[in-house]
Each structure stands twice: as structure tokens, then as C-alpha cells.
Length: 249
Picture (cartoon, rainbow, N blue to C red):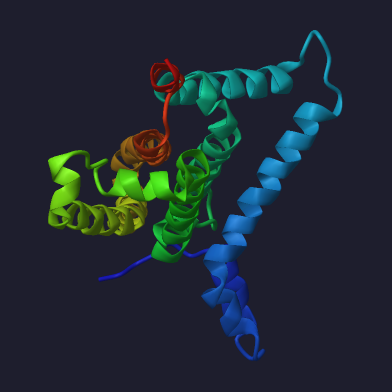
């Protein structure tokens, strides 16, 4: 049975059920909480960069450490040329993490428990990866990659390159689906666990506190997995600096 903890938006919608627009609060509730996370992150970013100094304060230091960590993470996979993707991957991780965690706040909800939210995120990754691949490889190089870079007799066979092209297209189209389902399913399950344990009242408090710790760890892990897979998708297409030098040589 589908059960959820009461949310602020749901309570407001129920109180205003007589209003014709109240039902839209429920329909758009995931978007509302997503925008709330955007607002929180925007405020943090403004506060962290408003008075930058050589000797940073705690907030500026925390943000700089985060940016440095993400930079090492992305460049460790993509090489130095992957630094241009640091803002995207870094924003993706922190955005997903906050959306995962906000559901633990009373009367809030994790937007990532909805497939519409996670699929939108996965679609952004998919579009950006394909755009970056075409920009990096050129359209013909992009098609060549999808066909498995056939050369010699393999290229002349025609059938094998076309088969590889078909398989790669299917694989690319499946990626946003699996990426979104993985995140949504895990966060949805965590939310349902917390909701179920909350129904036990005081008797369920020890299990609830333990489960909260597990859910927080899971929220971080799922944000990391989504960001890691997104970075790997870039790595599959992009040519590293070492390979470029070998081709030029």
C-alpha cells in the first residue's frame, strides 16, 4: 500500500481544497520542492561568494573544498580536459543530494522519489553527453564511434557497422531510463521505510533513528552514483589528451 508522510504542500492543498487551483499544488508538488532546493542552494552560493577573501570563512572554505573535491573527481576520470564538465557534475551532485535529504525534514518531500524528477535529470545528462560528443568528435566522428570505429574488412562488411550502430543507439537511449529508475527507486524505498516506521509511534523510535542514519548514507551514495555514472558517460565518448597526442603524433 502506498503511504507517505504528510507534506507541507499537501496540508496546504487539503486546507484549500475548495479552491479550484488547490489540486495543482499536489500535481506540482515535486516541482515545488525542487525549486525550494534550488532556492536554498542559490542562497548558499550567494553567501559563500558575496565577501570572498584570501583567508576564507567557514562557508567559503566548505564551498572551496567541495569544488576542489569535485574537480579532482571529474578530472581523475576524464583527464585535465574534463575540467569544463566540473560545474555540471558538481551542480548535479549537490542538487540531487539536497533533494534526497530534504525529504528527511518534517513536512518536506524528496523530489527524487518521483520518476518525473529523476527522468528529467537523466534526460539533461543524456542531451549534454550527446551534444558534447558531437562537438568533440564531429558528427561523422560521432557516427564512427557509434559504429564501433570499423576499419578494413569490418568496414566493408557494412552489416556489422550497421548492427553496432543500432546496438549503440539502443544502449544510449536506455541509459537515461536506467539512470532515472535507479535513483528514483532507492529514494522512494527510503521514504516508504521512514513512513512505515513512523507509523509505529514511540515503539518504533529506535528503528527510526537507526534507519535515518542508513537513509542519509543512502542519499549521499545515490547522489554519488548518479554523478559517477554521468561522468563515465562523458568518458565513453570523449577523447583524452593522451589519445589526442598519439593521434597527432
